[in-house]
Image (cartoon, rainbow, N blue to C red; front, side):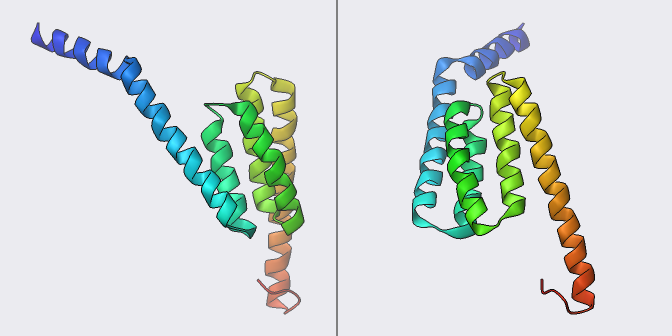
Length: 137
């Protein structure tokens, strides 16, 4: 009987609104921290902060994550960061999936896959060319 009461108490604590608010407060703190990091950094570090922010927002506010992904894609394009661009597109697809916009999500997942494959081909070519001193890594 005591085990049953203990189980009920644990379930109540896990699913209580107080616990959920604490989790949302932690997430808000992480989101604020990432926003601050984006404002104070440039280049790839800023893109990585954008990616983490988009990942953090996909379960809270996917639409806001999509708006940040547009800014992140512009930055990735300007820096020629193909790998990060593919990751941003993939995370944007996850946000669309969370919003139940499945056709757009599927299309973006395919775009991200193509970019990953393109990046892998370029990396392999560069590794091969590096052996012959045509390219530096």
